[in-house]
Image (cartoon, rainbow, N blue to C red):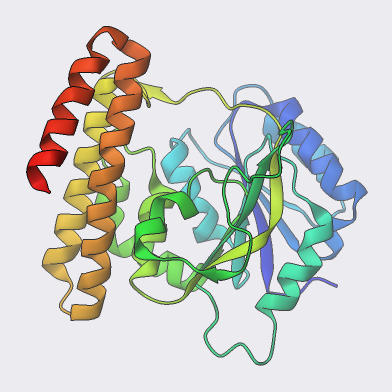
Length: 300
């Protein structure tokens, strides 16, 4: 029977049939009898809210609707604001939750001998049509997430587990960075912040799987998130975030964690930049590789 431990949170916008399919799956598996379910519609014009209200009638599933479209980032934050349980699983409106794994997660989170409850859990995540056993995100055994792994651990939203109270405080403390124009990685910033505050773990089981590819997010100034201008802008947002945290944190151990994440981000940016060049300007890729090789050799 469900209690105040865990909520599955689903942000949605203009995906009436997709999110309805996910909800029907949860109801059919009686997931709403085990954990709480919260869906926040970002003021969809396609009748998503009304459709979900009919499906969820008498189930106890909470379906909320924003008074206006707040944007994807603000809707992500709103899930934490409206969550009423200790932990929150966030999942896309197109990715199925795996009901059989929920009991195992509940057992871990409610264990009496767990002295320091995890602030964040990154479970495995597989592509639905994957032909190999390598997870799209995740590791093969339960382990602490290192600072250098902050991006890999929070890459892609579905299935990520957050401790709500600490996450609310973290989101408040970094709200300036979360709300910056062009910010497409609020979940990664939140994970980075939580890594400074307490234990965060990899989990060797999946909680959701990829059902379909979401449309690429874009804005008018930077285009799709993997375009060159967008990558430069995203990196600047990360730089601003880490420089701000280094400046404001006095605890030396926490500052060390921030510096390690900052260094990992700088390395990751090189790979992202190369990927964008490969997609958009393959003609200059050899020159980029030659320049990076020379720089690497110079620094050895």
